[in-house]
Image 1: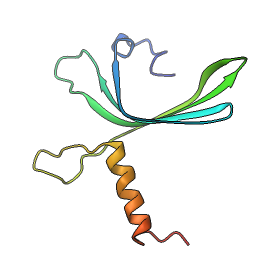
Image 2: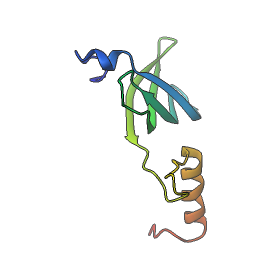
Image 3: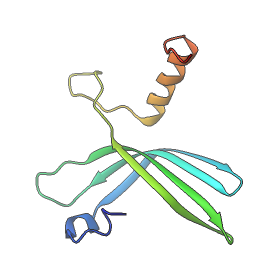
Length: 106
């Protein structure tokens, strides 16, 4: 990835801790969705939470990551501290909206 290939040494020592990991496998394709907490050993920089999706393809008996995407997890409005919800909470909320008629999906 561009981040890991960067010449900026800070990116090479990032620690990425996944939580709320969901795995799906269909034949030679697989994808993982998760919440990633990304920390950098830089004074004054706090950890960032990201929603991530990783797509894999199996070839010759080995799994290869063919795509990665991460977006910042935005603070929600629960609590004065701006707590960040989990991916599982987001998915649950979206399912509830769909089942309850909260979305207009044609």
